[in-house]
Image (cartoon, rainbow, N blue to C red; front, side, top):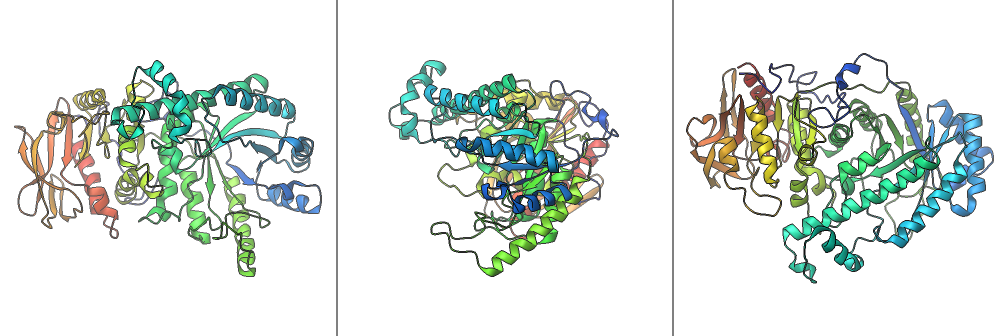
Length: 593
């Protein structure tokens, strides 16, 4: 049988076997983004050089020897963009810096514009914000050294998101959506919460798009930029963001995914590769800039030279067009000491340490400024981002960063790092609204997808019938977006009619046509697959002999189901690469049929 809608197995592995190779995920989603057809055909064409950026604070922008020393370091080490925080009352000084930095050192300026804490749907706030932005754009217009306006930081954490602040707008929500909600938020059901979250997120996207249009109408040459942290990439009810749609509004997507302060397995090693592989897949050819951690950030890990280099390499290999540094130059910096309240003085050791790190940042800046942006390569292996599942698995109350990306991060480590598979992410939302397609993909890993819309189940079935391979695990396809059970979904796709959980310390043996894997670990949800649709093939069994991994032919394709969470089992307690290698072998064996 053909391995996917396009037929043929192709090269399913990343270069270097099980090594971590994420080069060139420049397309959007599994198939071509509308307007991005032929993306892989640009391979071999010389691309632009990497852009290097760095933050500068007020004292470093003031005229004098200090400013010249810093700007000379920027120029000599390929740092071509300075991110600044201008104040409206100091525009004359700011414009002097913009012109001076560009004319004397070739450094362009990016301005981060602060705003008051507000509800973004409030018309009064929108008018005030638009007026301030218009005035700023008129001031910088015509200054060749000005490059981009930094609209927001970590959306929407700096806005008022408390329910009480939004209460005056519940009537508007009901009139626009037709969904009635009780006065007491605690009485809302999943459908109401989801609808209200998406409505607020849509309003923020519209607000941002209006500001972007304002900038383009006044100064088309000025880029619009926004920075995304964990909360913004993986939103919750209390941080409502339309991740893809919001990124689509921007000219430049920036990230601050500082590795080392999340304290979950493999995070420090691979979180940069994960986030930027994911985002590059979702935004197509749009510019993607990564802030690399150089100093200690809050209570996070303090990286060494090799780690800083690794993160730069991962960002570059994932298709970033720019890398840079926050709080880089050793002066009156913030967030590099643990004490936040009283602001403990900087010790001599810390002062010398950050100066040493600044030299490392300069060296890495010079090296990567000389590199070409990596170009897009096609990969037939897809990984699903189910936004409804993201919302269901991330707690509103738990603000810890790891919970925001762990459900998708563990599969990334297992498949891309341990299995050596090159991944391209595609979201359920973009598939349902027609912005992307699964054309060209041969395999689609769908975990975690516990909560999906019923229409998306039909998308999966159509993909398999046309020759694709879907691989799911324990909790996939359980509920729809309203919290109702997706009855029959796993039976129709995977051939699994019933299961029996066990608490016994069982392992899994998988037997393939071209190899076998013994004693594969299971950490959570050990499911004996006791009832199967006729014709469903057993690929793997629990150590007690009951079915654990099954495969079902559907149309021209095949669906595979694993009765446990293999991804958590791979990374939670030490490195176990066998599941990753098993999934790679499954892809290869099916591709040979």
